[in-house]
Image 1 (cartoon, rainbow, N blue to C red):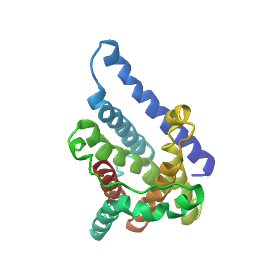
Image 2: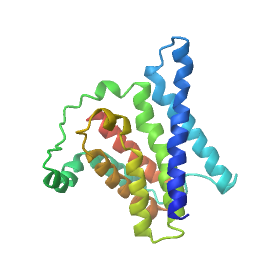
Image 3: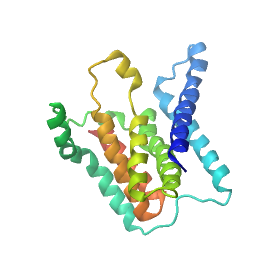
Image 4: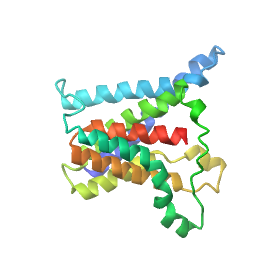
Length: 217
């Protein structure tokens, strides 16, 4: 996979996500309340689409996750849990450069949200879909043509810009890009785990615990 194909793939990923999100027009038309399960339905549909896509390009016998040493699941779990607290250290150069203060407040106000359907989607479905696309497809494809270091950096960059808050930027001109900065390093770490473990399983688990910690804290 070359850079152009990776960029086109990202655009198609975003477009498909937006198209899938249009399903809300159906219950909205009939006056049905859908907000409590919107993310769950949308991400489930996207995940199904990604799995079908991978099976088409890799063949029906392609199975996930690949077998790996159990230690990588332990490492991935620990890294995912610790990544949110570790962001204070990652933010040091960012805060110095942009004169900001991005310290994490540990108020644990997300505890009540953990059992909602939308939160389950954010914690479980989002990580599976994103890891399958950005690590199993993009990173795996890029490293077949470029160096591992470049492939890790570029796929993490694409992972980061995918989280760009276009809508929020439109309404808030003072929005900072710290979320993209943090997401880039998260993608980089997940990519390293994927390369080292040679399996998408640990990367997915790392991402699940990362999102879980983010929602909780």
